Length: 100
Image (tube, rainbow, N blue to C red; front, top):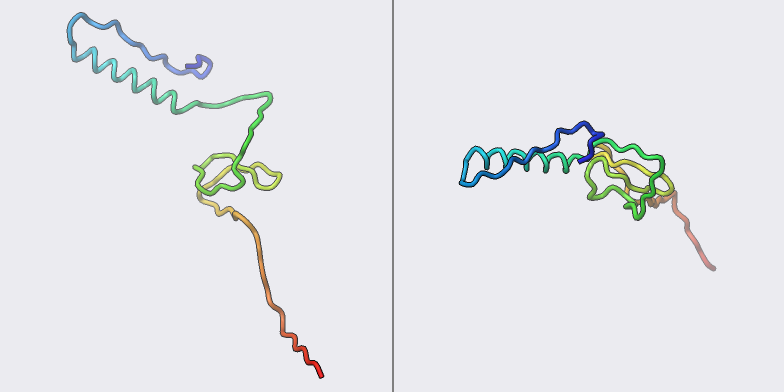
C-alpha cells in the first residue's frame, strides 16, 4: 500500500499458540481492509502516460473506462449513448429511364 494515499495500514497481529476467536475475527477484518484498499487504487498523478490498445468504442466497458473514438480519447459514461459506427442511406425522388 502506498503511504502517500493516506490509507490505514492493515495490522496483522501475532498468532496465538491456540485457537482464539477474537484473533481470527481481527485477522479477517485486516484482510478485508487490505482487499478493499487494493480494489480502490485512488487518485493517479502522472507526468506522462502511454496507453496502448484502447478499445475503439465503449461497448461492454464499465463506466469510467477510457476508449478511443477516431483520434479522440473518451471516457465511457453508461448514461450516454455512444455510436459504434456511422452509416446512412437515403432516397430522393425517382428516376425513369426509357429506351426507344
